[in-house]
Amino acid sequence: MKWSIIIPVYQAKAYLGTCLECIGRQMDEQTEVWLVDDASTDGSGQICEMWSRSDERFKCVHHPQNRGLSAARNTGLEHAGGQWILFVDADDWLAPGTLAALRQLSQDDGVDVVEFPVHLEHGSKRARWYVPGHGERVGFREWISAGAYRYSYAWNKMYRSGLWASVRFEEGRLFEDMFTIPYVLEQARGILRTDSGGYYYCSHQGSLSNTLSRKGTTDLLEATLKLYEHIRCQQWADDEILDELYMEACNRQIVCLKMGGPMLLPRRQITASHVWRRGQSAVRRLKWLLMQTGKPQWCRWWARYMPLSSH
Image 1 (cartoon, rainbow, N blue to C red):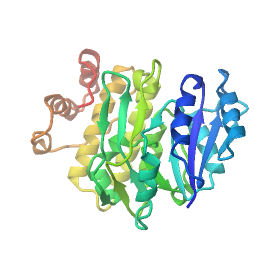
Image 2: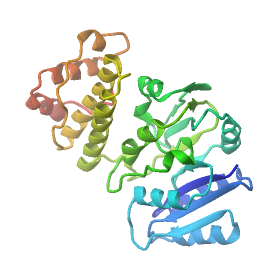
Image 3: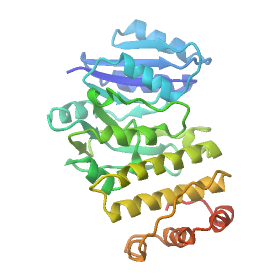
């Protein structure tokens, strides 16, 4: 069973060696790695060439000009020949034993996606583990109901390659994973959520996780609203699922406004019992009250004076 690991590379000279070494130590003869150099100018492309010359399992493709993360991943998808696909960013790394664990889990014929743990913002004071499950196999509805769309990352999941036959990352977007991954998982017969393996998503100065911009927050809001509208059209989508997804969009709207972005959130009446139920934070309840007014000026007031929060 052949595996393809796709690594987009751009200005990653300081981190690329660590990334490739951790993968190289875990690879077998059925694994190929596609290094897509997105017109780096810091010597990253030469490192890719060096690895491809020294080990035939590493393949190298160069973009003649910088096209962005989505385009680099899409190029990797065009070249990948494996039955399973895994994405790794050039400045991140896999925990030891991760590929072996994923190979074992891929033996389940009813599973098309394996979602595994990720250490978010590794290297920062905000570092924490996200563990998606403990071996449960779920469908897309259960994945949405669990709020897993908040973790629509490309890189802590292993996919059967057929899921990507008609799907590509949207170019020109930030937070491109949110525009793409839910619609890939929607096709899956089964999603296995495991506590085996680990992906280290590293926090670096200037990385997307450390910077907020008007474009980034607007793109993330638009991706969330796109998913909300998509789920709203599904027969299985009940009020609880839609209310929770809307509240997530509400949160992202506030952050977008704080960065000077547009007001895009549609009106939705959410029952007070949903927001006041156990487990909802006070900040989340206040945001709900604010959005129920339907007055953009109050939302902008919140965005101007209140601190950013993910709750």
